Amino acid sequence: MRLIKTLAKTIGTAVGLSLASTAALAQQTIQIAYIDPLSGGGASIGEHGLKHFRYIADQLNTAGGALGRKFEVVAFDGKTNPQESIVQAQKAIDRGIRIITQGNGSAVAAALSEFVAKHNARNPGKEVIYLNYAAVDPSLTNDKCTWSHFRWDADSDTKMAALTNFMKARTSVKKVYLINQDYSFGQSVRAQAVAMLKEKRPDIQIVGNELHPLLKINDFAPYIAKIKASGADAVITGNWGQDIALLLKAAADAGLKVDWYTYYAGGAGGPTAIKQTGLADRVFAVVEGHANIPHPASQAIEADFRPRTGQAVWYPRAFNQMYMVSEAIKAAGEVDAKKIAQKLEGMRVTTHNGGIGYMRSDNHQFIQDMFIASFGPLPAGAKYDEEGTGWGWKTLGKVEGKDTELATTCKMSRPY
Image (cartoon, rainbow, N blue to C red; front, side, top):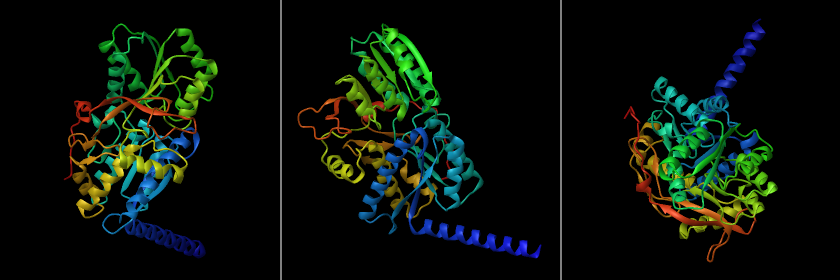
């Protein structure tokens, strides 16, 4: 019994020393916990996002970091699962990390936002800030808003407004099929598509409104058969990750010739699948930027990023987020969640692609220019194709940031 107690004490001391040394490391660098899928169906998206954040951290560190400390991005596999992501967030906090970022999956984002808010209420002096770079459920900056959550991607309502404004003038669109992932974001996309098309183009007939499991479908052929049978001339989808790449691949295999209005067709495998469809300039995406926008600074980064990572810049917003957080830390004078949050509110910056962006103080939604882009043969003067296809993105329309600002129901209580 005495031996067991001695072993338990020794193990407890070792664990305590390990946690203490880990916490000390978190003080030496400015650690950011990256919680996104690094396994399963969303792994390709998560891995690419990680490359973005580590590349940007290297950039910031080359420029001197912040407060004399370097940035370090620590990866945690959230597996696109809310419960697992919370477990990983707690592991990060136990390591002394006070900044968390995540983007893929609005259900995950909602769980993390609530978890961080509860942690902050229970642990004064050890608050955490949550930086959302891609989860676009509107509720996160409306009725579920919190002071510790900030979002750098436009919400799904803003994106749908831009897409439907673009579709409004396209008289060739007569019959639309909606196909989306069956969770909060996908449900929001289809609801807003129905509402906005009814308002802007009441003549359009919605001939299908489909939901499917998130990141679980390996063959979309049955869904494509339904779209074909419906007589649709256009599809609206918020699908991301393998769900957009495999959907487009199935469309190519079946020879489906329709227009596609998307949020995330530029993700891993998407450009290759678009090229396979042969639908030059008939796949559209609403984005905050792309590789062929003629802005010298972002073009220089694109030229450096591609050979270093083997991939294109998908997330201009990740650059906006990291640059702003770096400036907020410098202005705060310390890595303190409450002070960083306070400095982020109302901050204005030149965005990655050259526009002016700002963080709303009332709901912590970043406002930026949005673009409608199409994918096809490179236009004159364009430098960058995608995935070796010889095709790339070009701008068809632009929405000024100020024109994307929507009313909010956020009622935020702040500790500062």
